[in-house]
Length: 176
Image: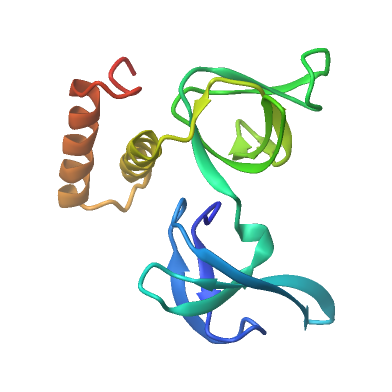
């Protein structure tokens, strides 16, 4: 899964653009390759998209699976409750599983309130249910349209309709 919107390329040197992957877009990992890009060793993933297109993307742009936080959740520095709390991940936020250890998962969330949550640990408060992840993605995309000063009136209307539908549903966003 793509951890954020990212470019995918037709060649392993990442020179010829092929497509842009959307955040949470699933891909099938075919292999990983170490390639020199601008003199730096870079891990590249050869992936197959849902339409069977084979492209290349930086491995660091991918994660095992997306999750959505269904309640405000403490993210710890290490995978134990005695560890320091690094941040609180708000309900409705999309994250990605980097690894699992018993009841704990290490997550990538991205930047929240100026802090980068890139490898912290949580032990609950999330769901990997696809419908919930898709609702969170719709919520995130719709909210970003309102934050963007260049959004067009028809985009704002669609975003408003999306948010109204989420609020009136039984989703985790009904009370937000």
